[in-house]
Image (cartoon, each protein chain N blue to C red):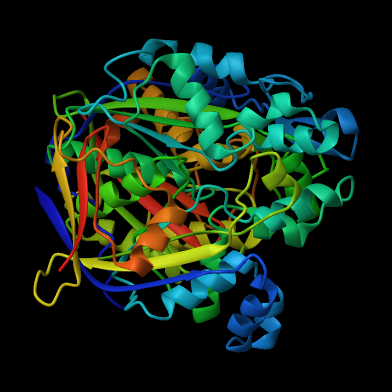
Length: 220
Length: 374
């Protein structure tokens, strides 16, 4: 069993009815000039990263299935005169890069991943098998319009971040990975990024099987 | 300069490259190597938006752009990956690590144009990779990396980590990026695609690039082969969205650790060499200062920039060149160069025992990988 210990977490999810106001409130804390060019996902990523002890030596894993969906829509809408700004913003992993550039925070080890239903366990597997002491996992999506209608973007805007370490002392939760055959006692479905963020806020335990092992998330 | 941060990859004692190949505008690895040695260029003028017109830009394509589902390159890629189809890939002990910057983004462009739902399955990274897994019979144990033009480097580094820590028996790295109107239109909007053919690097004040189709695969194993992966280093400046820190510190961060290795005088260098003026200057000068005299080559002037696949494509070509006893020089460029160690003529790999492979990307991302050969 490989274990990683949670020392900090933070999560935000925009209310579909009131998302613009929530986003505007998050923006207020940022320099106006930079904030004007940031995507909703970039602003949320910046917000959750504020609570994380990120340094140049932290391993940073960034998980997003759809990345900058609004920028993608805007870029596609700009043809036949493609917009350089929307092109830059639409490139994976633009959301978290906006936050890191705003902070002028370099990172040595940065792993952006772009999976589907199993993206959470891909992120957790990378976190568990990394021997370096501090890992921050950031995940998020931003709600889009016509791409979401076609199933090519999220309908929800959210972000969360976890600080995972190899230090059990004072841990708030434990992420476990048991490699090998599926554990019959862990029959839960793999949570998606949105659902995990909600479970995180509710402090719920989780257990599920993946293709390369069994995962558990247990609050202390 | 401050001591580099913890960018070091796993102890590389037990990770070797076995089966591998690549695909470019020239052909497979063998065909491409021959073209590079001959100094030939695959870049040709093509409309930036394909069937929808646009300025001619330098592209090295395997087939012309068209609106199609599956994408125009799908059967090409599936056929190329035939040697690694089916089990055990994707099972518990045999992860598949897929890297790309754009996946099926041209399907998203077509979706926006044609509103045809047939494009939807290919239009997202995970949709595209899951379709590939189904087509090739791979299991669910796969990872999808997307970090612009260092994507393939990350997949190779993590695959090596799986192998060297004993968490996988073998690992398959697959990288691909095929150009479409979304990407060529975007790069042209950034004003870095050169319309002054044929040389993308030469005779232009600002430096400029071409784009190319690219794909590659590698099988990594603990068992011996002539090619052993060495140390890998990455650094992400986060200075600017597209540009590098003008001090060149990001390049130094991934080069300096290799200067302290025992192979300092034993390698040649496959540079990233995109062709943009500032990045080209910074890379060439950093390499020259850190490794004076070590031959530096770049092949993007022939292949075009194959974006998220470039680290894997150019690694496969480096291995092909070593096996065939002749390293192609820099193609598609001419003097004056930014540093004296840029080589334009082919040379022998036998004077060295390693190659240092470099990649860069938007966000000031930098990566280096040392590869040893017998």
